[in-house]
Amino acid sequence: MIVGRRKILFYLEDNILEAFNKLLSGIAGYNGTHVCGCISDKLFNILTESDVIRFLNLEFHDTPKT
Image (tube, rainbow, N blue to C red; front, side):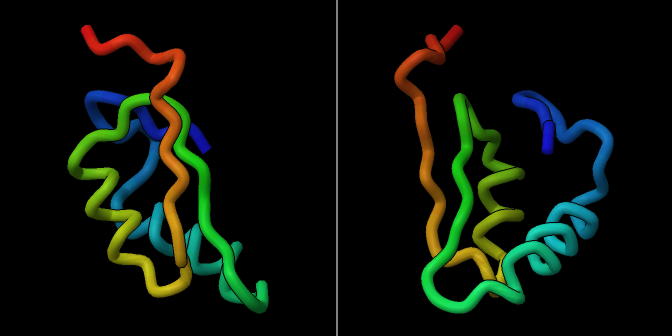
């Protein structure tokens, strides 16, 4: 899923939550998602609103801040 760094591309906020809820709701146990690079405040807030995402794995190693 490609969302975008500065603005959310291709998706409405509700669609992002709906996709994660559908993908992860059938998985028992501990689950989450990995985010590569910078994450916007808006996307972070959307992902933390999910009832099924238990953790966010954020990676910034190869993403210089500009």
